[in-house]
Length: 298
Image (cartoon, rainbow, N blue to C red):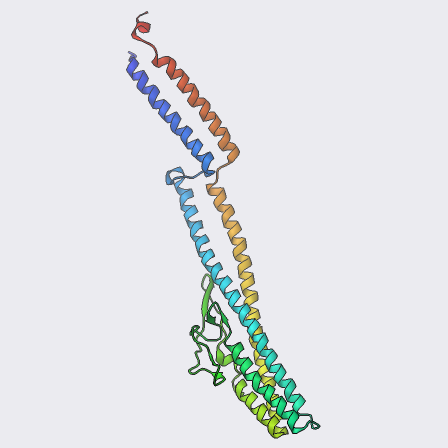
């Protein structure tokens, strides 16, 4: 025997179906308004998990990118200072060659010696170059000037600590040049001692001391050039890393879009269909629910 549905049951069934239709319409509206296919974990648990993983990768890449940018700025500033230091050494060498001219008078050599002395102050200023309040040649003690501007020597004790940056997964790079490396290579008197010796040799017209100073200045030129080459290699490496991160950000963004973003054309079609269904359900319900007991007795 087939059971007979009462009017109350019919109304309840209609309301349940109407609620389901409205829920679908609401979801379609949310998809279209957010542009996202996934708006809650229940929409696609697997997609949510993949999206979270990709976002973790994005966060790590952004952190590394900031380190790369900071390192590039630091290394570029250091290279500029090294270029200026090289100019000082080259000028000192030019003065040494000029002072070796046997036709110069003692007064002329004394004037050259005075210029050599001023180069010491210039080198100290370069050695105390800073970036954002941080002394670039100060090792890990970036808040203290690495060179004493009064004594015109490196401040003691010299901080030889390395400033390291993690620029990618498991890749650590040292980005700083310390004061001891700037002031001279091992086995050669530091730049201040060489300039003092050059000034004294000019004052005394000591050709042997001038020749020694020239050799030491050549060693300092080679040292600073090598430091610039070291920095240039790191800058090139960072540029490649930055390019890789840029490509990775694009690829990750595209993948996230494929997982999370809605097909807008499909979303519009789905919304239109659900609106039609919902409106039709409302119209049908209005006709059914308005029937009275008299309608069933006829």
